[in-house]
Each structure stands twice: as structure tokens, then as C-alpha cells.
Length: 334
Image (cartoon, rainbow, N blue to C red; front, side):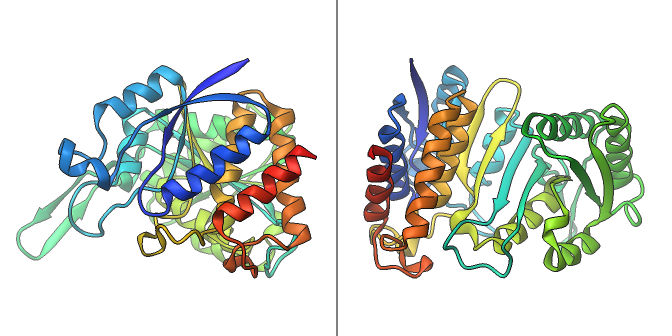
């Protein structure tokens, strides 16, 4: 059985890690036909937007996409393509696993958790305006519908993957109405899942607890902003953004992408670690129901990491992006 999947190569290092990822996915034997759609800086001048309508149309049609990193200028220019894509396609759940990998240096050895982040509202809704010349105001939007939906998603994920605990992260002691609503919705949904443990933690305390003993946590349920911050913190617990995959899912489609950015200064040098996007490919295979292929690819990644001879510079090796991908593909062929 073959699949048609939208591929957005991305900006900067995106095309290199996209090529590495499609190479190892092909080596699994799963038949994927890629519909390549360009977005980001490279189409901005031509199309007047970094996210042409044809990109979302392709994802809606194929229902699944693999996406490289896209560049967003800080403080000026166009809006974040990632945020716009999630809102346009109603990709309400961002899933970012963080677990230790063999051979990847880390202060911890027993981290295995997942950040589940509400993806469509909070301060990322983009409702902001200037107040005179010397102030600006951003509106934090939290709704019951979105909060209950992401809470249920987190508990369903726990059941489906055999995880035992969901911890809601909030700041309801200060933002009593907005974060208070998010927490109340999580508590209400938790009552429907008696087989899953539930707890809550104020976000600043959560940061401290994660760097003290991350093994205590399983699934972190977060509003948009806290989820963005904590998922990077969790990536740091297991070796950095170079090994951090993610999924953005909704009712109709899913987009898989590395957590890291486009690193334009490294573009074209064949030095970037491709694992974050390759591991996003593992998540894509699992989403397609190709669980055996997903497990084989993940095992091949771990085998190459354990062997340690074909690693990129950030992992202590001298291999290039393409060389590391070739080593993983060769493992799959054995």
C-alpha cells in the first residue's frame, strides 16, 4: 500500500535534512509518493506570502505532511508560517516527545516524557495592538472548547501509548480566569479517565521539577505558550533540539516537523544533524499505521548512535548530514 504525503522542504538547512529523511523513509520499504510544496522565504517574493494557498490545499487533500523548518524574521516582516499553518488547518494538538537516546550526551539517563501543547489559541492567537506610541497589548485567549479538546487528546494519548500520568501545567494562581479555565477543564476531563493519574503544577515550579527529576513526569498538558517553552526545556534534558521531533495534529490532518529552526548560516554545508526530522518521520510512519516500519527506523537510529562512527559534529562525530542518513539507511537494509 502506498501513501501520498505533502513534503515542505523548508528554508535554510531544511532541504538537506528533508533529503536525508526521505532517504531513510524510502529505506524502510514503505511506499510514499511525495507532493513537494514550497513555503517560507523562497516563495515570499513570488507569491506575496510565505504560505501560498496551494500548500494548505495539498495538506488537506493528502491529510498528512512532512515539513522542514521555515524562517520567520524576529520582530518584523511576515507572521510565523508555523503558527499560520496550525491555525489554518486547525492543528490543535502539538506533540513533542523527549526521551534519552543512546550515545547522545545528557545530564539525565531516564527521561521519557511527552509535551502535549494546545496549538491554536493563548497568546499565540496573535490578537495584539499598540496602545499609543509607548505600549502594546497582547490578548491571552483561553476557551472551554479548545481546553477540553486538548485535555481529552492528552488523556487519549496516554491510554493509547500506555502512559500512566497527565500533569496539567498552568499559572492559575495569578491568571485565575484564563489559566484557571484551562485547569478546570483539565480537571473535568480527568474525571472521565479513572485509569490515568492526574496532577497539576504551576509552570515556574514545573521548570524547577523538570531539571531536578524529569523521570517523575509522563505527559505534560500545556497551554500554547508554556508548551512552547517547556518543550524546548525538555529537549535540553535529552541532548538538545537536534534530537527533538514533533507532530501537529487535528481532526482531519497531521504535519510532522523537527522542533529546531532553519539555521540559515549552516545551509548547504552538509553538517547538520538530521535526527530531529528523521524522528519526526518515525512519528509520521506510526501515524500512517506503519508501526513495524516506525519501530525499525527508530531502532536503526539508535543503532547508529550506539555505534558512534557516523555522527554529525554536534554529536561528537565527523560525518555529514548525508553520511549519517546513509548509515541509518544501511542499517535498515540489514
